[in-house]
Length: 278
Image (cartoon, rainbow, N blue to C red; front, side, top):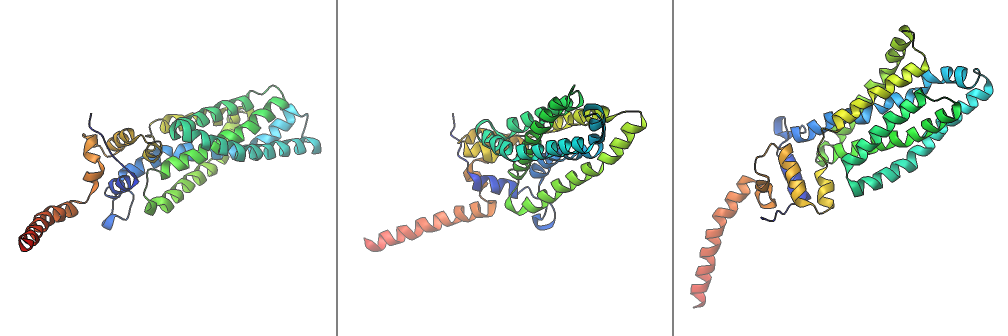
């Protein structure tokens, strides 16, 4: 078996040569495709984050006996718990992604977010709703963090700002769509449970598109899985020969030509020096 050596410099060179636009000012397809596939994973949680705006009144009426001051306080406490779980859970999921991979951790969070959102919709009591909603903060935080990390690890540094802007624009568009979604649910006679269930089903799109994204080659390199990183990059570049992407082949053709022409000259100089010495 041929040993394949690859490092981040080779990876950046391969991705850099795929950039589009005049003078390579735009990200290439190996960067844009993962970003588009991961966009739902990053953006769809906006519906879960903002859903209490349209759901809390119904929860108060059905599970807390009315929109009293006490009920509003309990719902505000649940929202606080959502964000309290967000931070520590995101830290834990990020550490987990370093062990099992970016993609498995991300898809696990996406599946958990859909399941917990369904739990909120089907909650028989306020205690169950509060527990599901609080745990949902961890799943949402993990989805956002890992999908962003996976998208940027498919880019070079010059593309980081553009990709971040694109992901945030996607998030904003999804958030703006929550009001029309709630209006459509209300128009067909749905209550807060119907809206929460609809959001839960929409989250499945994150699993569908995120599952098509490739694992991060930078993660694979960090885990010393160079051959696997090379194979993944080969698929992204649509290269039929993964070994052709070895570190040596990442040199620019002009540089290779320079080295090739410089070698005989250097050899002749050494011969001359040897002759003079004799």
